Image (cartoon, rainbow over all chains, first blue to last red):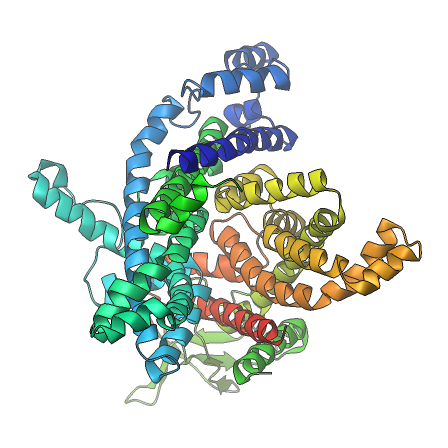
Length: 327
Length: 310
């Protein structure tokens, strides 16, 4: 188990170093300078401009600035947000819980839906339900997330007002007792999480269907049937357990999509998370925030992938055995 | 080919044909705003009155009524005004999909938007295929260390939350069709690289490649003349997949205001327009999204059918 963790952590090192480097190079290569953004169109005497450049360290050569940035980022100091006038770390720390919460809920929904749909698929392969679910899944997976979000708002909070259309809490909710606050947060998160998980659930269900059909033909399933286990028990206890592996791996692989998707979903639903913060920072040319957010979202994905690997090792003894053996 | 694959091909061909023929189709000007007061946010299938007099700009009206005394009145927005219809022709143009908040015809905006969306999608798919194909070929035919480095690069690129970087790059460099195409292509080449590498390795072990090598063909000649033709089928399937995903990504960028710049409409920017009027004019965001989703579904069906034939 420890070996799995160590190997994954080692593999993540180049990525953690590479992504901020790439981002930094892109920022340097882009036309336009940060001072011009700060100053806007106002005519400014050159000494003010120089003063501002010195204050932000922009008068130093790019390599020095890059090394300084790395040095500070290692201690979680990402500089000062240009547009919000607060430390970048504070801005992102405020937004991170909302994104992690939303992504966790979406992930749970995604795996839950995938398992339920996959089981429905496998109940009667090539039956009417199997085919209908296949077509519906294909359509859902092809719909752009932001449009799905708009349609969800239209149908589930305008036409039939079940869920709130935006924001993460009701007005005045911070004064409520915590159970009411938690319920309120869940109620607000339901629609964005549903939209965020829809596409991936459809893809996962398709893979799970294939896995289930394969395991249903195997000996241990036949043995379970011969012992008199009910069809539902065979499906859930025996076949599902054996085919959950690919689902967990794919869930790990779908994390970049989930984090990317959260950017659009947060913008659509006015969710106060990292995606919206990043988007606003980028539109406002607030580069310190943008740089840190890209790095942080990559870290989130790496952490999530690691969790998926651990879950896989926990669910499937064969993986644990593999990790011990030399490859 | 399966029925669903055929349906996908037909839908895609129809979309491309309509987009290409847009200038010659009997459509209204996609950016014309002849009368914002009367034409704004008309629901689908709405008809208005268009009163034309020779040598004059036409007058638009939401309603036309005859007063008990025989006079005529038109309603523009909320206000009724008397009108004389002598020498005028009254037409009742139909707005099939309705209009947006500025009174622009949605049908023609969607058709013209298809041009930008489909063009950006197919060019970005080409960039991704070219890049991924080259990297996959090099990895598959190159020596061990090259293969290892390129595949590490691919795995790393797959683990990056793409949209965060895309949005950053799109905001840093002035958005245009070229930058949009390049950044989408440069961030989606990874699956193509993996597929091409796998196929290249299996092709490189086949007799005809060995024969070419034995006959003295250099690595470049082997790659281009002997391996590349064998890659055509999986490249074709991957092209369909990439096309669908690229128009999705372009739409996401346009939706965030970072794609192909206005005034050219794209499906993503049309959906963004509709977002502000979602609750009082549902049709503005709905139709372009449906167009987008059906093209992506069609591309997926086509790719599935192709994959089954491989």
